[in-house]
Amino acid sequence: MNRHRLWLYTVLFAGVLIASTASIMIRYAQGAGMSSLSIAAGRLGLAALILTPLAWSRAGHEIRRLRQRDVLFGMGAGVFLAIHFASWISSLEYTSVASSAALVSTNPLWVGVASLFFFRERLHWTTLLGIALTLIGTIAISVSDSTNPVQSNPLLGNALALIGAMTASAYLLIGRDLRRRLSVLAYIWLVYTSAAVVLIVWAIVTGQQFFGFSPITYLFILGLAVGPQLLGHTAFNYALSSLSATYVAVAILGEPIGSTLLAFFLFGETLALLQFGGIVLLLSGIAIASIAEQRTPSSATQQHAST
Image (cartoon, rainbow, N blue to C red; front, side, top):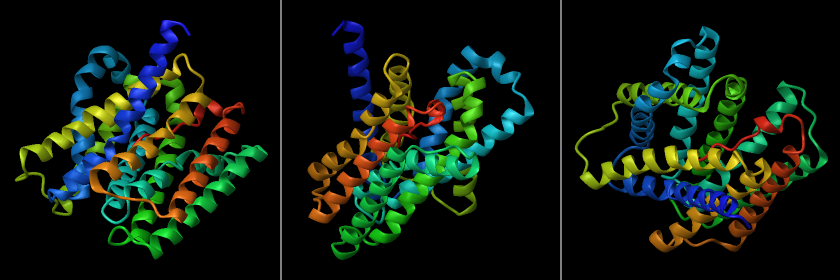
């Protein structure tokens, strides 16, 4: 193995590890009394703020010349990204880290289902197998959580995590044409800024608090913006420059595994046997479907939305 390839694997592993910390930092911020909507708004707001000088210095000319259609589609993608973070982060109030992280990772399958119905893209039989395994795994997780609740309302939390997965899929589908025309910096600046504005306005209108928390709480929000939001996404995009999309897509499935392990050591969250089996089935289904979809001509548009 040459040094460059070893470096790519190292960057990808680091990206997965960084992304795995998102659920943990969110839990700590929630424990300090900050609302889920404030956490989501802070995460996207800081990420957009940090990204703005870099995006405008390197892609300012492109951003200034954006067509109205591209701006509208970027804003639409940002709305769905905002709902994704609001619902997924809220899910961590009600269900376990393991269930939330696993269920929100199903977004590639919802992209496939939506592509079938809205774009008439044919799905390979192995993709359908992956979807079936994921659905069985989802049912197993829900049944396990309802009979052995770890948190206050696991069924609501699981539903919110699935909404997070579906809205992430909508964000990817709306933005997929933009990704072909725009540079990465111009695209993520437009989408992140749009999502941040939606979340901040949403939080203000609903009376959420942004101030009066401990310094460590704000450090967790900054960590979410710099770590999973910026460094995690950047690591995955960098790895995609030389590694296969299939390999990266499957490697990203290490994120819910990492989150589950961290929750076990930090919060003492354990897995029931049925929950463990459901998560194994769910992640196996995503892996099978991801491998199948990367073999299709439209595979370039099938991406994960990292937490």
